[in-house]
Length: 586
Ligand code: HC0
Image (cartoon, rainbow, N blue to C red; front, side, top):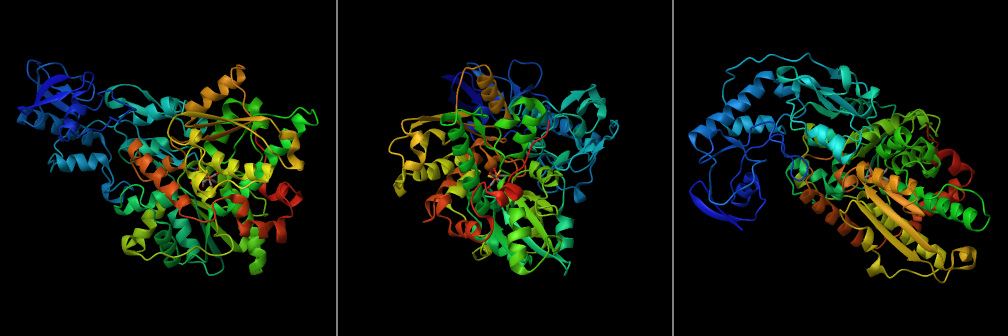
């Protein structure tokens, strides 16, 4: 242990601790802007300055390790004035349209300026040429608000291994973005929005589509249907000051009803439907490989996370056949609402308006893909992020925290616990295994023991091997087969896994990939900032939602069974093929 003093009080901390971490442990808050716990500590913004006795200049506490007998001062006049000056200089370059910025009251620069007591703007800085990038469906950038903290660069490069954003030029002329000031559509951006999730200001955000939804709700000729993704229920409350991981499924439903959506459906329903389709697809591929000796693409990868799909299209086009052909649950719901449900109402697809609430900015891009029109119209009209829905609820004057609970609508509002856990990394795999095990063996899994522990949690790549025993006659070719599965979350982990497979160093049958760290609970459209602590709280809540249900397996969802009986026929049948499956593009 290392003995130090902070503001004249003695402390003992572990060797290797930074001054910033030591201060945090001592309950002292040092302001930071470029720092991101466990992700980035580069001392670029200089907001976290402290004084260390015997060191001439003030130092950035996020990069300075403690040393024995170090005497640290965190709030003397010199430190306070230096931090203030640093922030004043940042403000001098920053486009300060705070009242109309979507980060108003949720902006780290604004909070720090307030906390440091900055009440006037003393300097006028030189401004880099403004670049407003609206080239993608999911994200918008405004360089005039960028403070060059490089958080977005680090997550894009290190977490996602995409490197669409990087710093260019120097000093006041520094800009962050694709090369030559071009749009995100000119690079391999997958629109995951992890950059927007860590941006401390309003320099990069989701494309705001709230006005389109208000317009649809005001249009008497449209039947406006909303679906909410599994991950929203564990995060939306944070927009209203509730603790991360507070489950708000019932309040969210009541809020949507008050906003006058005509029907409120659950993406969990179509997640259950996905398990039926994707499970059947996997078993069919295995049969072709093991019984018919056909060449089929294995391992099969999940296809529900649109950032991952675009990543494969950009980087591994020779492996597109390995992706499941299933559309994502979002898109399956859109197709079912505009056909099956529309028919029940006697409406045409174009009289229906489908809104999705997703934790993900790439879902905006997915909905806009030209092939996503199985119903004859665009299957999903608008995708809102969790943050946008939070803003709409506020705009509607709804006191979210005090809302009573209510239930989603029939028939597409019914979802299983297996569908809930789609939100967590490892959840799609567990949901698939719950169903596959029961269908292949004919035996029921014990209700109290449904979790597949090796694929639960935040480890980047997780694996499990399950030997299949006691199959029913239809699946006897699987008797004694050891099914090997893997789960990866965040694209850097996905890339590492794909490279291992390509190098022949690993073999699997089925792989789940989610684009964002932790899965959708850590999506780019979730309330900011998603730390590991926040991820863990949301993950716990999602498992609790599953454990609190009696319906916990996708194949037991009666509303899905009825959909097959009345409309689709069988999984992978002709109608399913037309409406629920898709193809990918090199
Ligand atoms: Fe997800 Fe999904 S689980 S991708 O993470 O499969 O965005 O929550 O809605 O579509 O269901 C996101 C979350 C979804 C889809 C589902 C899948």
